[in-house]
Image (cartoon, rainbow, N blue to C red; front, top):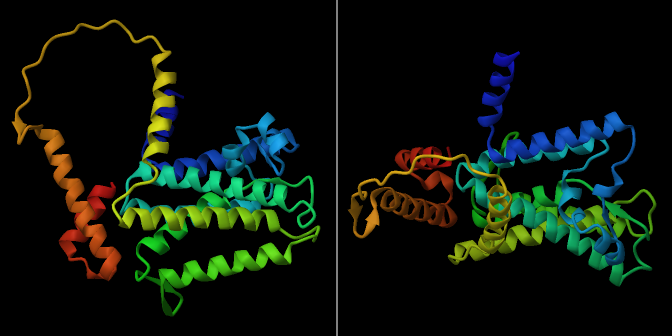
Length: 290
């Protein structure tokens, strides 16, 4: 039993951050099946009055699925998008875009249902990871629009894919209005995620990471929970000062240089596409993604 549990831990530790999110989605889906009931306290309500009583739902709705195919296709998209994204960008940025996409999608959904109560069906509730996944996809489409994607026998530029998906979501919003079987709310959330992904990418090309504030907030919250645990007593000893390069610790200096190199390569991708990279640059990005 010990070896089995250790083997499971080892496999889980090798999952990337988005694969772990896929695992969380799957676990919550299975819990819902086991309970044989809806986990409605995780769903995002359409009204701000109800939302104030359940503020956590602005995030938890993006981990909730009741229909297997809804879960399957969202997680399939997330898996393939995640492989492309994490070869180029950091896991923390992936989390920033995922969660901010979910939050923006949820806010747009609630705003539209509140401002236009006679247009959209009342007492609606939102669930599913689509808005968060849309944010990651549209981010890639906007950041490197000329990167080509193989689709059967054709090569499609990423910006073609992004535009097509946004058009389908806009059509979905209007076709679902006052339609009991429509999905206007879901499509509104998709558009919210898409807006976040596009804006994030455009700001990043200008040298500004708009997710840094959110990242700092999350780090602070995690540190608060960690600080609540008592650390074991340990012997403290002084170490010799580490050698410095240009005023930086050697490790920090190397990380700084690597980040600069990554920024230069990403800028090259944004201007000329992934195929313009040399084999050495591709290998460097792959290792950095790992």
